[in-house]
Image (cartoon, rainbow, N blue to C red; front, side, top):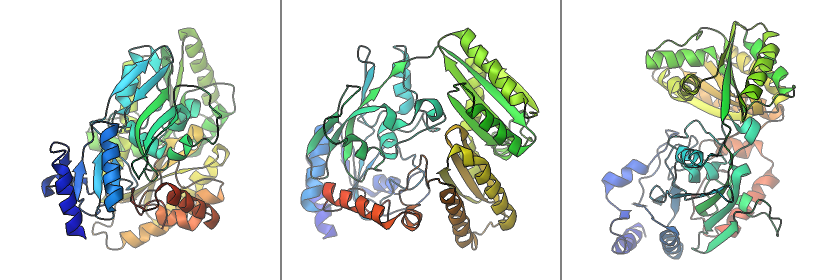
Length: 463
């Protein structure tokens, strides 16, 4: 059967000689993603250039029962793009067109478009696409839609779903559907569009998205507060949350996270030896209003005995700090023999309890657990680091117990297993363990409805 599928793909390649690659040198590069998980070597790699190419390949795979996985830039952290069966990989990077519609304040984008490129194209027209995952300079909008990506600005502006007005989708059998469009309102029947957002590429292939844009805020400041007491920083964040102030993001960073960045970059970071940092961004359209909010924020923060507070009014200063923040994931990876990175989300009122629990787990286990994330919306990135066990012999079993404890704590505090990264391959056993069986059954029924042959991104999300 496998020989027959390879033969069929060779026949298909005659129609697409510059789009379909079957050689091992190419296919071996698509066995993994940013999660570090390795899968099966793909049968081939296909680079469509338009929706029609996707339709033809989907129809071909459906007819001959060839599993396939749609991939963006491979920046996902849960193995969502990892092939666990002999599959075809459809890479969307050639479909990267961006059209800005200034009259309707929308962007018409193909799935391979880089998120930062969308932001830049919008900014050229004084418009704003706020969603800003840490990998925005390398991740694609198709991957953002598949995972319902968020980022620091989700506190004020929301996540990917909040900006998707419409989708063009190719179903697993090759049929094309359009869900929504450029209208801001649509209550005509069921909201099918949202089923595909966050479905991790298991129900259909997005070939175009219609995104809502906003007027571009022209003014921005960054308030950087440093604390010698870990939980004073958390209390300060809670106090800001309860005011009438409207920061665009509230980021929490453990001092040890910045220390890891220092070590990786060989560059000093001010007060990296402190317990915690808060980065609070305020944006708006009038400089005086933004500065006024910055002053009010500082007054709230000073009630919690910070080591220092810096107000950064200039873009270059702000971007320098944000760049350090974006380095944390790689730096914590660099600082350990291995790490487990989870991204739970809890109600903001329960953040202190969650972080206290992480400190207790760290104390009992003897394993370094470094937390940072978007405290404005309760999304914490928990980094469990293998610093001592170089061989990794006991690490695998031990780390699973710690990850389970992290998830168990989040669920008991009214939270979820993932705020941004999705379930994919690495979390599916935990999703099955912590999710009501009735909910999983509904997931499976939806999957069967859209993909009865189980061809599209198989063996993801649940066991």
